[in-house]
Length: 396
Ligand code: AMP
Image (cartoon, rainbow, N blue to C red; front, top):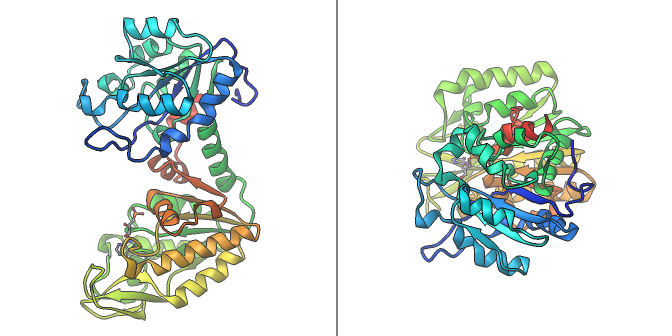
């Protein structure tokens, strides 16, 4: 498999699949440039080598034809400013104008193609559409980890037209290698911390991690389904009744496999799902109606911290409570600091999933963990053990 670091792009036209699906305001200004900024390392390497760059991406969810609000032309001024050159724009991602503009590129030139999803063929994984895109470049670079779980024309199918000339960009390569480091090469003790709203969203992750981890810590809304399954009273807390049996089986399965399964012992409870509700602490197994648990309590934090500090590898996905509301942020904040502390002491920590990443931002700890995955859905599928079409297409 080719490695971007060793590849010389001199006089090559690199066709890069990026994820420029960024939020725009009403005046089409970009409100969060993180995803764009993350691609500069790959683009600059190619330009520095003496190659040219053709960028392709989707933006939003167009209905299958061009729409002003989803045009990638809104990205051009920012790209030009950041790359310090005039970025060219093809107002159709395939067809004569794109072919001519790509053919005319000289070393150092950057061309951005219009939104791929203006063609329904993109999401259908249409081979002919992929072939047309492939004709624009000499080398295919996939740097869009966020869409790697989709078998789309530009993320997966296109790779077959570059059997010997395809590779990951830096962003994608580091996502894949850091996730593999945790899933296939973890140092022990390995602790997974899972939180978030529901058990249903995490079952496949739990199943896939069960034979890998030494410790499984569960917090967030999902803890109450487990606690109820084990005979606790959880009042009005979030419970998935249909998953009680399964949750009991998970706890039993963990015991059989020698995995330490840690649940909170106390909770911060409220009489309404609101930051203005009355709040008190309670035994997590004895929550009276109509109160509901919205965060883990201080004893649980201490208990979890003890496990986290002894871990060599930590995977964290999902907040411990409703951290978006100040009265229920303490548990998530404490665990974020605990993971940061363990990292400082030498553990490898990987944090991923939209809400945990947002929590790290909120508590200003993003730089204090080993790796933050921005992959969203793709990251979740990866830790569920699924093969991602965008990754497989390059690795094959
Ligand atoms: P998820 O997308 O499944 O990771 O869930 C994240 C969401 O779970 C966040 O928006 C949290 O506010 C929410 N959450 C965390 N703890 C609880 C809880 N105890 N009850 C209800 N929602 C929670």
